Amino acid sequence: MLPPTATIKSCLEDGQSLNITLQQKVETNSVGAPKMTKWQEEAFMVGEASEVRLEGEMVREAMEKKAERERAKKEKEEERRRKMIHGGAR
Image 1: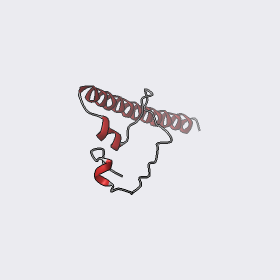
Image 2 (image 1 turned 45 degrees about the vertical axis):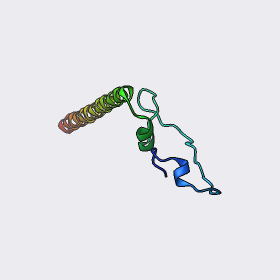
Image 3 (image 1 turned 60 degrees about the vertical axis):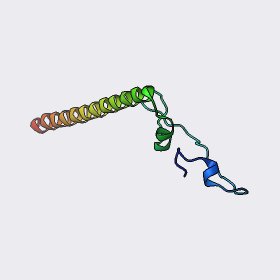
Image 4 (image 1 turned 180 degrees about the vertical axis):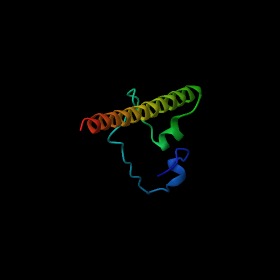
């Protein structure tokens, strides 16, 4: 795979061919925006607008991870309570 900074003419000579594989599926994040591949980030994430988008994605990811940790903690607590209730009812 060529890096985003490469030009086709610098990698091929006359008569050579180039195979291009198009992306078949676009994964999206929690707000429906496309998840970018590393290559796409290198190629297109430049400038202030990109910085704002990346910051927003980082904040959303951190919030999602925190919410998942809180859900897991709550599930453990609920399981512990169920065990205490059912264990104590014998």
